Image 1 (spheres, rainbow, N blue to C red):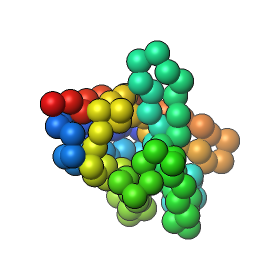
Image 2 (image 1 turned 90 degrees about the vertical axis):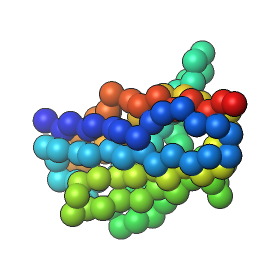
Image 3 (image 1 turned 135 degrees about the horizontal axis):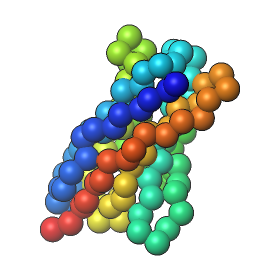
Length: 115
């Protein structure tokens, strides 16, 4: 069974940075597509960024140029570096794993951006 554990959320002021991490166990991490999603209160969950097994990346328009997704297959970990954070980035951020026959989610980590 695939398990995902996110960390790195917190409270920051606008313009500051955070790095989220997601450690995956019980899976063939190296051939997975990993994604970061977020859900703000009253809104639908949306894709923030994703990275394929070969390192191809996708970003939501709202985070392009500010966020960077990366992965370390040796550590079964995917990262989301978030720079120049804005109040509208406030949400619960979820890690997603898509692998052979699997589509799994982490428990989420809260990111709050306010002054």
